[in-house]
Length: 222
View 1 (cartoon, rainbow, N blue to C red):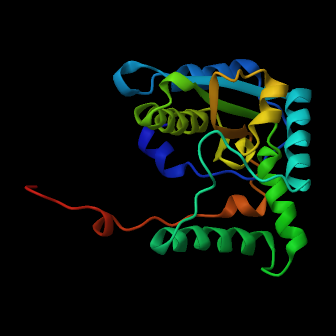
View 2: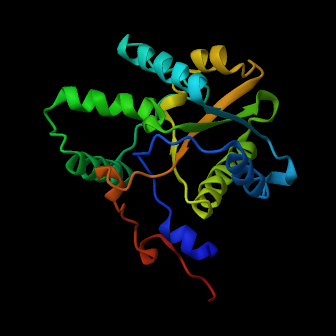
């Protein structure tokens, strides 16, 4: 697939077929993605790739934390709270998703179910957790982690895979470390759900909007 086509066709996938991805394909996705640029070529990323019983165990542990009412304590700061246009875009996305999923605003039960689905990596058969050594977890390293995350999602498209970059599963780093063995010396940054898309799943029909270029670009001397 051409790169521009992959960029335009990529979307966040929130419903997956149960079929596990072969290890060879996951490895090829990551081998492609690690060609991504990083600040001064430090390549700060670490990958933990999950599937099978290990992923099932982690999904259960994260779900239990949420249902017990444990406040999120991610390694990278508190949950963001946006205002203004940023909040508006966030709300627009949520409304669109809930409309597709038939989740009414007042239906607290279904809203909780949806949150649990997010925490469970949208029930994807595989997941990738990206972490970074604490000694290099400055701004440039975090910027590099954003680049590698994007590159993974684009490489996955070429293999017929869907992805969703997520913060919710890393809200509780303690059970992640206990189950995966990620050491305390690493900060857990982000998670990526990955699998074969279930195109019949309602949320996968979402086409999120983008701000017109003229609203966000300043042209000088061109």
